[in-house]
Image (cartoon, rainbow, N blue to C red):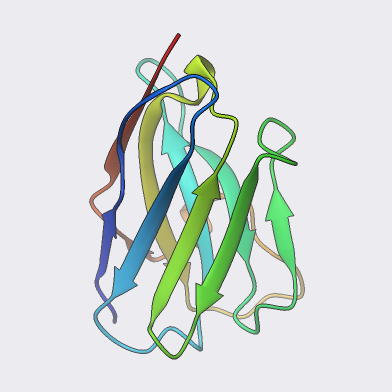
Length: 125
C-alpha cells in the first residue's frame, strides 16, 4: 500500500486561495483518490474525488465551482485547488486512496483504505 502525505494547508483570508498536494510513496494509477475534510465537532465529509483514470470527478455542493481536484499519476500526486475560500471551509483536510474498483466514485470515507495525516486549513473572516 502507498502512504500519503498532504501539504499546502495554512491560514488564509476569506476570498483567498490555497493549493493542497497529496504525495504518494508509490504509484497511484490504480487508486481512486479523494479529499475529505473534518471541522471541529463535525463528521468527516467528502470534498472532492477523482477516478483512477482521471476521467471523472465529484464535488460536494458546498465546494462546487470553487475547488478543483486533479491528479498527476506520473508524479504520484493529487491536488486540490481551493479558490474563493470561506470561513466555513476551515477544517483538517485529508486525502485518501481507494484501491477497490467500483462502477462509480465512492463518497463514503469508509470505502477508502489509505489515508494521509491531514493538513489544517483555516480561513479567517
